[in-house]
Amino acid sequence: MKIEDYGLIGDTQTVALVGRNGSIDWLCVPRFDSAACFAALLGGEEHGCWQIAPAEDLVATRRAYRKRTLVLETEFETANGCVRLTDCMPPRQRDADLVRVVRGVRGRVKMKMRLIVRFDYGSIVPWLRRVDDRLEAVGGPDALSFWSGVETHGEGLTTVAEFEVIEGRTIPFELVWHPSHEPPEKRGDAMGQIEQTAQWWNEWSSQAKCEGEWGEAIQRSLITLKALTYAPTGGIVAAPTTSLPEQIGGVRNGITVSAGCATRPSPSTR
Picture 1 (cartoon, rainbow, N blue to C red):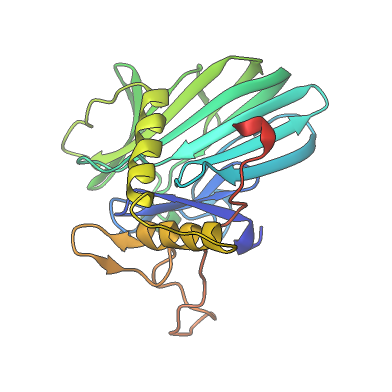
Picture 2 (spheres, rainbow, N blue to C red; picture 1 turned 90 degrees about the horizontal axis):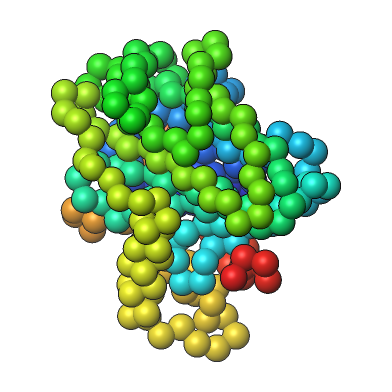
C-alpha cells in the first residue's frame, strides 16, 4: 500500500497510521521515538498490524476525518451492506490508548479482525495470556492489553475474530499500552472515549480562525502539526515514521504523512 493511502491518528505523544484497508500498520508506543509494535509498513503483516475490515468483496471505500478533529471514519461498502469503522487515540492520561468502533450503517456485513502484535519492530513475539476481561501481550518491558466486543481466538500467533454487523449494531475494540510490570489504566466505554476525543480536538481547533477558500485545508494542516507535536516538550517530529530513511542506508527522513484522507465527511457519516 502507498504511503498516501494511510490516515493518521494520534494523542500528541505518538501516532498510528491506518490504511484504507482498515489495517494499522505503524505504531510506536509509548512515544514517537519508541520501538514499533506494528511495523507492517516496513515489511509484511508478520511484523505487526491490526486489521478490522469486511470479509466480503468491497464495492467502495470512503474515508474522512470528523470536522475539526483527528477522529478518522472509514466506510466499507459491500454488496450486502455498509459498515463504518471509527478510529482514534484519546488524549493521554498515563497509557497510550487506541480505540476502534465498528458500526453497522446498512444491511448485514461479515467482518474479520486480525491482531498481530510484534514488539521491537517485529522482532519480538509476545507472550499472550488472558487476564479477566482482556488479553495481555507481554514482551520485555512492554505490554498491550486488548478488549474486544466479540469473541476472539488464536490462529498461528495471531488473534482473530469473525463476526457480523447489522444496521445499528456497534462493536468496540480497545488496545492499551502499559509497562509490563503494571496493570493498564481502567477504561470507560469506547463510544464515550470517541466523543471525548472529538470534543478535545474541537476545542483545540476552535482557537484558530481559519476562513476563506483555503480555511479548511489550513485547519487540517494545523491539526496534523498538532498531532506531530510531542506534548510534554512541544517539539515537533519530522514525520510519524520518526527516523526511517528516504533510501535504504540513507540518513535523510523522506517519509511523511499529511492528512492521509479527505477532510470532508461523506454524507452518510454525519
